[in-house]
Image 1 (cartoon, rainbow, N blue to C red):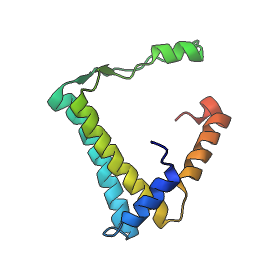
Image 2 (image 1 turned 30 degrees about the horizontal axis):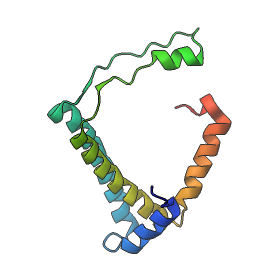
Image 3 (image 1 turned 60 degrees about the vertical axis):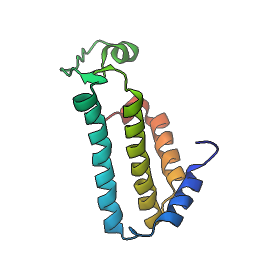
Image 4 (image 1 turned 45 degrees about the vertical axis):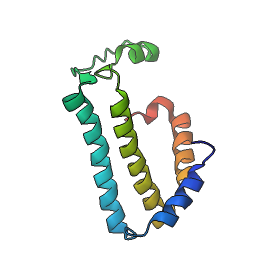
Length: 131
C-alpha cells in the first residue's frame, strides 16, 4: 500500500465520509459494494470470458494428508483475469474496503486490530479455523 497503513486509510475514510454517516447507510452501502465485487467477478466469466468455471464436487478422501488435500482441491477457475477485469474488480474491492473502513469508524473499531486478531486466531487455530 505504498507505505499507507490501514490506520491511515481508516482515518482518510473518516475525513471523506460525509454523505453516508448513518450506520444504516454504511451497512447498506457495504452490502451493495459486496454485491458489486461479486458482479465484477461474474462478468469476468459471463461477459469477458477471460476466466471460466468448471465446478464439481470436491474429493475429500479420509486418508489424505493436508499437503495432499491442498494439491487435490481445486478452485474451479480456468484461465487468468485479463487487465480490464483486474482493473474492474480492483475498483470494486477498493470501494468495499472504503465502506468496511467506514463501518469500523462508526463503531469505533480499529481495522488494524481486527486484522491482527484474525491473523493470530488463524495462527493459533490453524486447520481448526477452517470453515
